[in-house]
Length: 247
Ligand SMILES: [Zn+2]
Image (cartoon, rainbow, N blue to C red):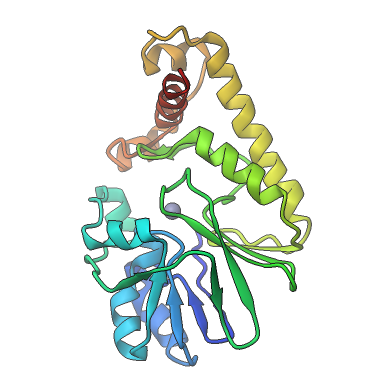
């Protein structure tokens, strides 16, 4: 899976994974970074924060939840360490809400929790740009981290679909044309998945029983490699947690 780091008008959005440090530093050091923004705490976004912040001696911003999480980041799986690489704690993230400005642009910060509770999108209404962090990734998705919420993702997708933008700078899969139709696909997919679970879940079934009843198929390679951190079963667990919280 590709990871994208964006630079616009002195602002660096995310820092990539530490596994690609050599390449990221080589490219990003050519730029004149004045501020760094972390969309969320995951290791493929925060992996090169330390060397980049030290090099540019610039402030680092993120949501208050991101700043808090980065003080003692959650442990990652063996597979995540192999694929991305880990990142150290960081106590220097300045919490921001509302807006982040560059010389030419004003980015509205839009909370989009679900994939991660601290995640923010950056929206530039005058340019029609949305830096969507990991809200999209793909039209369909076949695994979640244990910590994800499905209902929050559904709400975040609906919120973002009310905005007016033409280009979506996704951190894994930029969409340069018709991004809203792609986000709608993702919303439809999650609503359908959630709806099918809500229709059969009786308040007592285990996640595994729901999984079997819906005839779902696990991607075992991903499930095993990630030691269970990434799985389709986690999608079912997330939906059940959300349904239980609704009551
Ligand atoms: Zn993420």
